[in-house]
Amino acid sequence: MAKRVFFSFHYEDVKTFRANVVRKHDLTKETREDAGFFDASIWEDAKKHGDLAVKNLINRNLENTSITCALIGTETWRRRWVRYEILKSYDRGNKLLGVHINNVADKNQQTFPLGRDVFDYLGFVISADGSTLTYYEHDGNDWKIYQDLQAKKLYNMDRQHWGKGFKLSNWVNVYDWKNGDGYNNFPTWLDNAK
Figure (cartoon, helix red, strand yellow):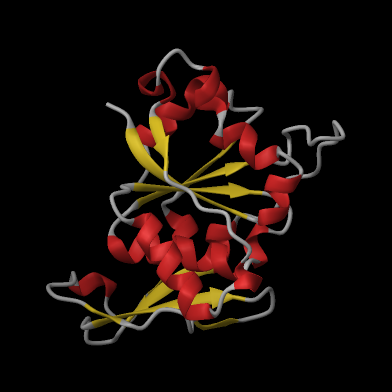
């Protein structure tokens, strides 16, 4: 059964067409079931909206999705709204995966070295008493409390996790579209999302 997927990406990767190679590959499949997903993405320029309007737009488009796929280009890891989409997805219980797209030729037939794994720069800390989860982000120099999502109350957190921090990259699978034959393997990647 096809899943409803939210794609998170840096807007520049749409302008160079790399993000759309992944997002629109279902158009060349016989059915959407063959592609394994329905696209629930948005791509509006955040500069045209205030922060609250952008958050509300993202939140609305995450509704009825169960998986969030980060399309990882060169600067994706730095993008504020990509970070929000990923952490909000985790916060609401979406499964996560990442796909490197720098090996996909852009509109000028250029490819680029792999971008940094955005999941290495996002994480959370469980409070010492296990009652709260606080989101964190790494800015390239240091970890700091993530400001766009409030801490989350926890209930029945396993004691072994109390007082510890976790990077999302510890369990989120990341693939390479070109080298991993994403065109044929994307449905399996969705099935393996965590």
